[in-house]
Length: 105
Image (cartoon, rainbow, N blue to C red; front, top):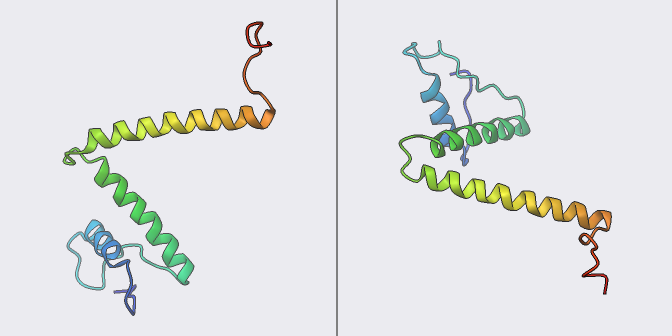
């Protein structure tokens, strides 16, 4: 294999999943799964991207029995974040709400 990691790490599952994703029956040493990194930072960056990719695929899989619950929770979270962002922008601009005759005092 062109890419081998020495030592212990938390990335073993990512490497296995990437190899399973890329293997198409080639003989040993003839298949390329795209794991080429020259620095520790590049390895971490590559593994983080693959981790997000695999996590998203598993969460959004039609075989995931909790898929709809996750989608609903994500939508609620997005709406809550939009509200927080709008409130933060309004606060930053100095707006505390619309002044009307009833709240002017």
